[in-house]
Length: 476
Image (cartoon, rainbow, N blue to C red; front, top):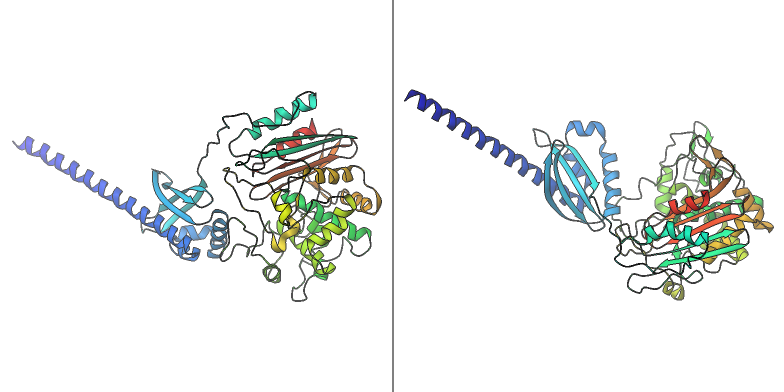
């Protein structure tokens, strides 16, 4: 009897322990669920500081409240409204939730400490499987020459992905130009992009035009590469320098000013994720510069910066007392006969403007770069960009002097070599200049080798990178 009671007592203890563990697990799950929903609510209310108040002391040793808010504001600008949150799984890092935003699907990972404070908070993109289209995408590639076949081999895997739409490509080999068109200007129309008519956003390839505007000012004697940028900014902005070394115009064109990729105040307040720069006017730009503190000597380190390039474009507007677009057209486009290269499009041009698509293959809106136009605001056609590439291969006239200047190396270290705007790839037997671009729904690439008289231009109306295609053609 005594032995039976002992067994029964032990069994009851085990059951009690299991119930206790289960209740604690449920409480832990419930606490994490509650935290996830609260994070979502504060995020949608634009209150990252409230989320930070939920974090533990350990979490705060890794990040200040100001850093956290800046990061969350940037995240919100990219992803938009947070629509739903659902529990996925539990692991040693905490609880994982599927978070669906307007612009993406993310995995939220949360871990609470014993007091219920957040000690780990992390977002990561949900794995996405991009399938191929179930039909062969249209193309005008004749598949006759070795070049035709090489282009087909490189472009076909790209254009068959579900999240791509259309692509135009040109190869300039001395005096011969080969053009190729794949896909469609709009997934609802099924119309091949036209080399002369279809307009694309070229994104950061704009930076090479921006730098060429600077080179032209220098060759005409109205500016110097060594001019401190404060010379062209409001007096309210104190000297932008580090230990007495001034940030100069050349540093904006070759990404060695030490500026961050984007100004920290660009994502404060309400930002439209489909047009994330539109609100960023000169007032906000100059307010940022008024409080900016340099942390590295200008000209000593390459750090790619949309802020620096955008600021250079704004400087041109201040000194020329006209818009970036008017300067672009007068100083570059008209001399080169680039009649379809603009920043803002009229009604007729909008009808020829390709529909852009994001990384998931969803339709996007055009971007307005506001005070950062010099970093990526230009729209153009393949034929116009061919003229631009030809001008780089054979510089002529007054603009030719500026083009030659823009191709002179202004900075080099073990990883980067750059002229004015153009990045430089040095290979064993040759070198070539190049730049890639991207906006919310477009990608671009321009590369050229003046010695070999060879160039490649690629424009795509999907936010799926084309740099690899362009560089492989340039290098092989």
